[in-house]
Every structure is written in C-alpha cells, then in structure tokens.
Length: 280
Image (cartoon, rainbow, N blue to C red):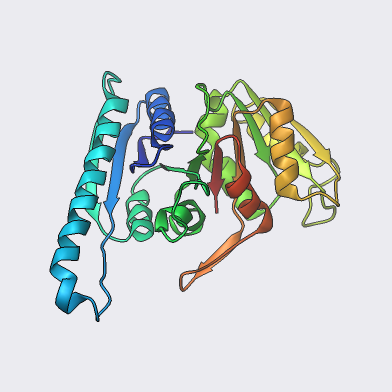
C-alpha cells in the first residue's frame, strides 16, 4: 500500500488552526508527503439595494479584512512548517470556501480540516459546514481535527468503526497507510447484522483477516447496544480504549447543495474528541 504523497490542509485564522497544522505536519513527515496549505478568501456579494451607494466602500473594507485573514493564515502555516524539512506549498485562492477546498482536495491523497467550534464560529460562515460537505463532495478521505486539538502520535492507536458497508470498506482502504504504521488497531462492530448483507459468523473477523494480509494486526470486538446511538457508542469506546484516531465511513448524500448526513456521522462531527478519518 502506497502512503500519502500529497496532503492538503485548510488554513484559516481560527484559534484551532495551529492544532490542525501540527497534525498535518506530523503526518506529512511520517509519510514524507508534499504538504499544501490552502487558504480561501471568500467573495462578498452585496445586496442590490446597497451596492449603488456603498458598494465601493464596503468592498474595500471586505478586501482589507480578507487580506489580513490571509496574512494571519500564511504566518501560521509558515511557522508550523519552519524547520520541518518538508516540501511545502502555499495557496491563497479567492472563491467559495466549500467548493474551493473540495476542488483542491481532489488532487491530494488526504485533506485535513478542523472541526467546527460552535462557541466561536459564525454559524452562517461556510467554514462552519466545511467538514460536513467535504466528506460527501470531495472524493478524498477527510481527516477532521477536533477544535480542542490532539496529542502528538496521531494514528498509533486506531479504532475502526465497521458495519460491512461500502463506505466502511472505503474508509479502511483510505486509512491503510496509517493502519500499516499503527501500533494497535481495533475493529468495532456495533449492533452487528447477520445474513448475506451482514458480517458472517463472527462480526469483524473477515475484515481483520483482510487487514492481516496487509500486515496489520487487528483485534475485533462486537457489541449490542440498541438503545444507545452508534455515534455516542463509538466515541465512548474510543475514550475507554485511549484511541487517538477513529476511522469510519461517512453515510449520507449531497444533491443540489442539500446536505443529508447519517445520524452517526453527524453526531461524530459535532461531538468528536479525537481526530476522525472519514470516507464516503
């Protein structure tokens, strides 16, 4: 399995950005990957009734604000990569945040973004919904870093959420470079199904065997908790096990900009306490 050759990280002026950058640098060094920092300056469209009288002045104010935010973002990126020895690239692009990051992510092996912080983020800002959209729109695995940050050593102890679905298999395949380097991998099956569309006689055994052929020694565990949300159970078990990364498939659909995420995916994105690698 080839490792990540190019990693894209979304960079902004949020207070959680340094933690996101630290994780990106760590992974890029682990895989000797080309690291791309992407900042997006959002276009500002004025209401028609405002533009004739104040459009010019408001446009200058907006440009000054975005230029300052871009400078702050680039300074954070430069500081994070200084002395790392990495091949790095800085991009400062004007456009829609979600569409622009998704487009650039399609030319990378992994995209890293931050979890939205409801206490500080503007709920009307596209950045608040960036992770939600990327997991369905980018076509690239998305690593979401909690706004509270994460300790060094990401990926040493991994919890994989498995339900024998297409999305779960895609997540395992996308995470394989990390799994192959990890010290501990656990496959967790919550409320396993039986039958042709289920898990076979022993839930999780077949995916563990598949990983073993890649040199990944994984253990499997299944549990039944029909009265507890799957997302809540995954986070609880990750905390109990001391996992530093959760790998899972993202369930849902995105059509005509209408975003519909599965319950477990949505719960994880809003309540995560460790980094989560999501694939769709």
